Image (cartoon, rainbow, N blue to C red):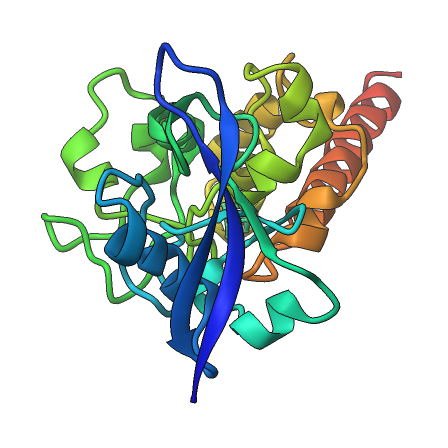
Length: 252
Ligand code: SF4
C-alpha cells in the first residue's frame, strides 16, 4: 500500500541562507527513510543533494540526522520514523563542512582515519601485495597510501555518525575523534609488536587524543555498528595510565 509521507529537509547552497523546505513523498508502506529522501529528488527537485549507495547499512554513505538523531536512513522504516510525529525532519550530519543540502565534506574525516592508522584489515581484504597491512608502515612518511585504501575497520563502516554526535568534535575538529580512536584501540589489541603498540598508545595519548574526550558516550549510543568508540577510548585511557604507573614504580 502506498502512503504519503510529509518530510521537512534541510536545504543549503554556498552563498545562500540555510533553511528547511517541506515536501510530500509517496512511498510503499514498507519503505525506509532513504526511499523518502530519494523521493524528494525524484518527485520534487532534481537539484536536491544527498548521498547514498548500498541501501543496507553496509557503506555508511547515507548517514544524516533524522528527527534530531544521527541515523542511517536506509535501515529506518518510514512507519517507525513517523510514529507519533507530523513529519520527518532530515538534516545533514553535524561537525563536518557543509557542501549542499544533506551532503557534507567527509574528506577530512577519512584523512584523519588514515593518518591515525586505519589498520584493521579484514581477512578478505588483502592489500595489493596480498599481505596484511603492516602497522609499522603507519609511521613511515612513505607509507603505502594505495594499500591503505584497501584497509578499513572490521566493524566500522566509516559513516561519520559518531563524529556528528560527539560534543568534543563540536568544539574542535583537531580531536582525533571516536572512530579513529576506536581503530587505534583495536590495533593495540591485535598487533603483536610491542614497539608498534607503544607508538599507537603514544598517538592516543597525544594532545588531540583520548584526554580530549568528555566521556559523553554519544558516539557509542549512536553508532549503528556497535563499535563502542566510547568504550574503546576509556580502555585506551586505562592502559595508558596503567603503563605510566608501572613505569613510575619501575623507575622508583
Ligand atoms: S565508529 Fe560507528 S558511528 Fe563511528 S564511523 Fe564507525 S560505524 Fe560510524
